[in-house]
Amino acid sequence: MSNPSNPTQLTYAVIGTGAVGGLYGAKLQQAGAEVHFLLHRDYETVKNEGLRVDSVWGNLHLQAVNAYDRPEAMPPCDVTIVALKSTQNHCLRHLLPPIAKPQGVLLLLQNGIGTESEIQEILPKTEIIGGLCFVCSNKMGPGHIRHLDYGQITLGAYGPHYQAQGITPTIETLSNTFQQAGIPTQPVEDLMLARWQKLVWNIPFNGLSVALNATTAELMAQPSTRELARYLMEEVAQAAAAYDRDISPNFIATMLDNTAKMKPYHTSMKLDYDHDRPLELQAIFQNPLDFAQAKGLDLPRTRFLQQQLQFLVDRRKSE
View 1 (cartoon, rainbow, N blue to C red):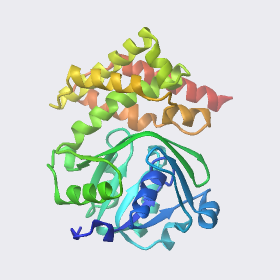
View 2: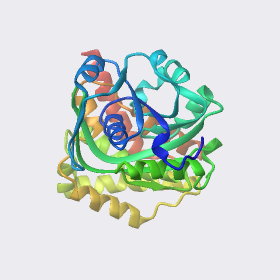
View 3: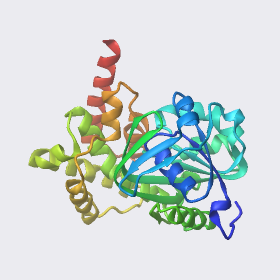
């Protein structure tokens, strides 16, 4: 990817214009970047009425949006932002080739671990950047996003088998672009460490919010569930350590404290469950369990929670 003096000269494609893609894509367009949005059910609404974001950073309404209902209609873009839920990744073999420039960049804004290698098989010449979003944001309706809190994106370059790549020129360019658009970013040298750190939060709070039908505030209010969340976090840290990635007790304590300070929040997995959408069990639970097992490590509490969630999903299907 070129490194222009004005990073907003890059063209951006957003695949998944929901709580994450809608928020960040709208902010990029507001800052002057050329952004193209791929939509499905919301296409007619966004095409005719634009994209509205109610945000703690300031509300915005983009009345004119480059909206498309099929990838073949979109121009190839320098940066392709994938903000789909990982449950839809089976669609990427069809969606990505018309949109992503072969020598361009793909920014993967997804939870979990292990997906980058799948995308590299689809786009072998494309540079892949993992993006981890610490944000409280929900999709309220077609073309309507509500951003409640936080919003920082951690950016890390992907290398084979998650070998640390350092801060690459592309990471610097994307970080500058997002900062200019008012989106805080944190470049990191080691994407695998960042993914394990994100799982420290996602595994306990996404999982427990569904299994116990609770908000983050309710989970943190009870000593028993706060302790359970800590136990799950410590298991994730053990898995990271098996890959020589250190997650300290202080990091876990900070994550718990930050969660306690959050506004009462329904996690993305809880919202998916409440709206009868597929849950990201593969990326957030099964893949980390597989990574741990590859090192001869068992994560009993994580596995137990995953089995509970799978039971809930299977029972709903049977009904």
